[in-house]
Length: 140
Image (cartoon, rainbow, N blue to C red; front, side, top):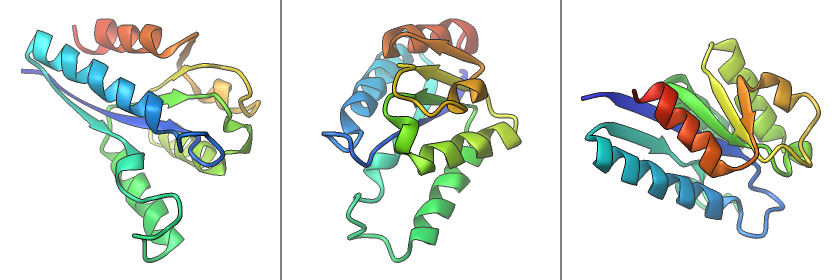
């Protein structure tokens, strides 16, 4: 049985839903692929750990180190580039992935910070195309 660990990066602050909606969709798609192919896909959704108001975090450093430790254990990053022009956290996550040779699959390349698309190995128009690519090239 294959195993794949995917980290879901992208803007949270300033998003109408805190960046949760697309991440939940990704989790569901990966769950369906996992069941259909009988593979283990672990999805790390950062919106499930700390709330954006900081109510359950002790320090900002704790939050950052927690996320970076999760990225370090990933096989790849799936990043929603939408609205990343003001997302310092996404930029740091992607740079950490680049520095650690973790592939980055991007989608929704609009309203993104100009350097972030360059960090991606490949970019797709939408989430479905990006996950299809992951399914075809990382789970075959």
